Image (cartoon, rainbow, N blue to C red; front, top):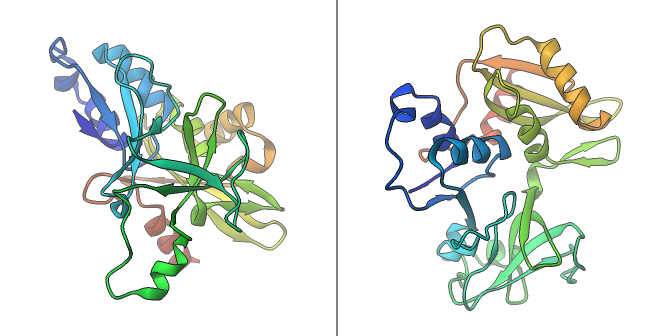
Length: 255
């Protein structure tokens, strides 16, 4: 079974789904957006099967990396490069970064596109030589597993510090009263940007104070949301991915 984080989360919140017999389920694969720890752990507890996370783009047909399916997968990573595929972490100048350093995930392989149709400038902008720049910030560990930190263009700059929405969302999603969460940066005169989170409640009793207290216990000060907004639903793509871009557009329209 394949799906995105929001699909797995939504299914587990359906009573009929929780009553199903999962004995025939052999493999669950997540992609399209970051798999949250709380969702992965609850899925394993419910079904007895781990979610194996994979990664790719339309420009890579679409697979670049995937976790092993023999029980050696690593939660929180996007796994190892696919066959015949090279993946590196690079800086803005195209230099390969050492293990443990954050940079842009770049790829080379037979599944990587040659370019965008009739768009030479856009094609040049996404390549370091032969290497495709994915637009995702990642890190490589000493065993060769890659981890996505977040989309480069969705990084939030708070007083000179980089804040990645995935990290904040991962913490907030683990709160028992939260159904869904999306995080963006909003302009701020003192610190350039501050963190704002949008939450769909699982429990109507959830308050802004509870969220801020929870974040105080689990996040460094500059990563904590300054603003909390509750919504009845999140804007999503046709495959269920939460669209931070639309959250940001709504925020700019309202301000």
